[in-house]
Image 1: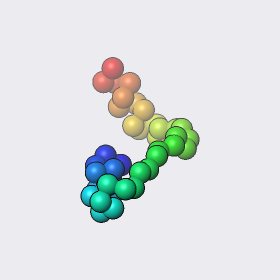
Image 2: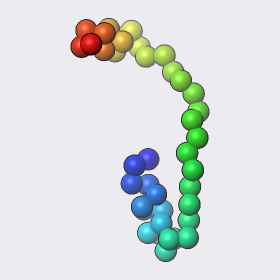
Image 3: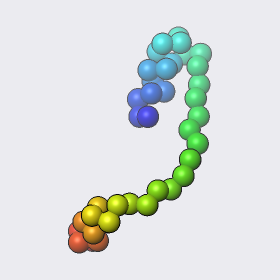
Length: 40
């Protein structure tokens, strides 16, 4: 989503706006979680 606001404003001559809203948390797969734990 980074850069989206700039592209949107450019395409609409600065008139458009947007908002983002948190949707949900998701569980990390075990193999990724173990890699994160090892690095910490």
